[in-house]
Image (cartoon, rainbow, N blue to C red):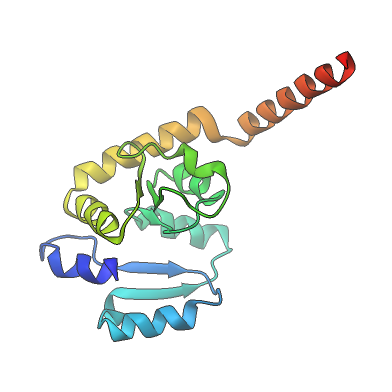
Length: 168
């Protein structure tokens, strides 16, 4: 619904006019029907499951943002690794990866459908903003989200836990 409203308010010269839905989940049929009901089927592409690394790389190379309204798991780190900002709800249903999103810096956290529309308009109208957000997302990935950094933090947690266990 937010994307349909976005399309109606976007300047004709904007280059962000297609929503690519990746995945083959249980809601795909419902979402395809909704796109048809909203008369935006021509602007929404249902890509199915994308597991091939090269195909995934191509998607991220052309993406303005990753939008996952209610879920923000490891896809946040993956999106950032390609320099693509992430948009999700302020309180998504999945793990703590959404805490990597710095609102307005490397992505956006929204609460209402109106908030989501405003964010989509912001990135859809301003190429410089998309570049800034993408650069910040990639920088955050390099500084905080690489696998070696996860492993170091996990190792430190295990060592500290073991030390506390030994003392008791």
